[in-house]
Length: 186
Image (cartoon, rainbow, N blue to C red; front, side, top):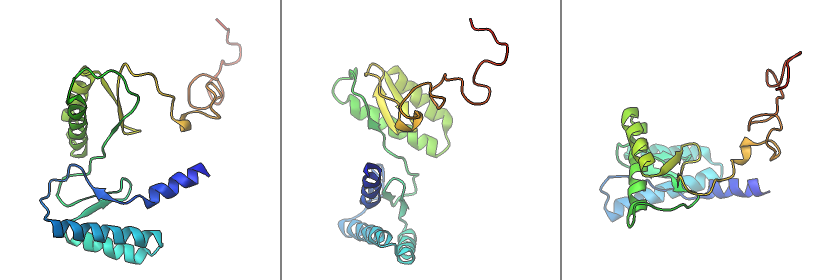
């Protein structure tokens, strides 16, 4: 039930403008885009995919791109960069404005990755690391290295037990995971 509730919440979450969208939009153009995006979401929720596709085409024709996975839209020609969120806490070392600086670097790194400038993305990740910040690209999070360890994602464990033969190491179950015939224990 909880998973279904999260799924429904995710599906009904309204779209928003990408935070790094640089297009200059007047109030009427912004309102028109937001209205089309909202109408498209309503059509998707009604499962009227023909109307949803027609609305998407209208958006594309007017220079607006949409990412359904992240519920964002943008009207410039920059790639989508999904924002990261802080996880865990920790001790900020940068004083006032430190979090803003970290978020700016994380977004810049995302833009570099999206444009396939991996050398720049790696340099930005190294800079963040020197600042005591670690990134988790899978979960789209960042955290200070000294923050308390977080529990692993639920999907990384089988039944919540380490060493149960699933992901999480050890266990020796499955092919090639245990000691072979005649192997000696240390």
